[in-house]
Image (cartoon, rainbow, N blue to C red; front, side, top):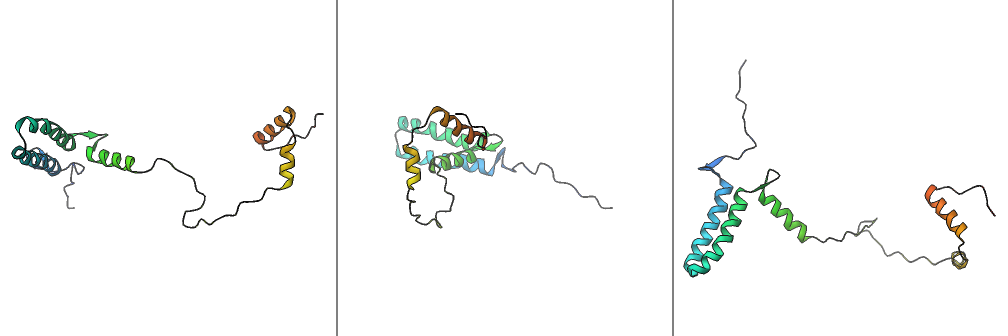
Length: 141
């Protein structure tokens, strides 16, 4: 029976450039390229002020992991969260099939019952009906 070698550590990225993966190297190389160009465009004092945040952002994207996932996934989720609306409105029908529904006319019986004053007993009876789903059978005067 032939034996085959089982690959191990398949969830780890390959180290391409020294101790860095390809993605880590590209994040750091991009930051280095940006800082290299800015070195010729800015005076050294302003360049230092800009270089520190750019290097920190590149290091964050290259090395920081949140919940064992690279920071870039967290950052993309953050952008998606802030980019979408926060108000969710329930719609029983999909918006494309929704039709104009004519408002129902109120029946006179409903208006008459609203005009009647609710007594505490009637209010308690209505609350019982709503809570239990059943009407009381014993009538109290």
